[in-house]
View 1 (cartoon, rainbow, N blue to C red):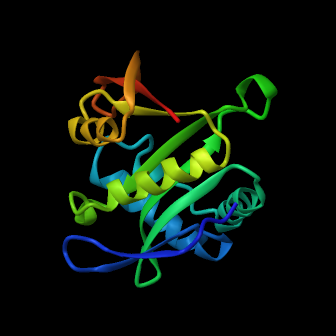
View 2 (tube, rainbow, N blue to C red):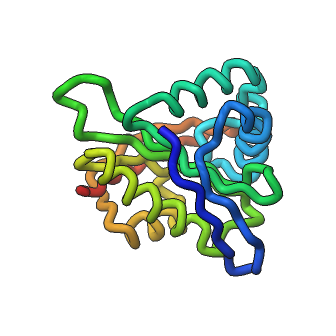
Length: 182
């Protein structure tokens, strides 16, 4: 589904457009994922694992656009993606239909400016409107800033997946699992 467009101003004075990414944004979204994957190890992938198969990304964006419940909250500066948040129904089965999974990425240059809060606030509101009863996410256990942000919006810790991520240097990181009842 597509969300309603919204214009905001973040703390550095930049005017940002919040809207759903569409198939026309596939290239910019791929570039965003490449950039954010290289800025921190807190992302699920390394830059070289990012897909630049524009046709594939266009299809995924089209699927989200046509979904009755899945959506994206994407931040644009001068028509380029600088932040991306997706909410997806956990599984398309009756017993799972009340649950959704959320993932977010913001380019480092735009972190700590209120953008994450605005995007999460928008996503929580839309998830409720879509009939979801709980919103779930996973976060690196040592990503303290992100955990604080999620807690600010009422997400609670409910589990740990040990050694969920194995970094290139051979070390492991646990994943903290969080949920917000809507």
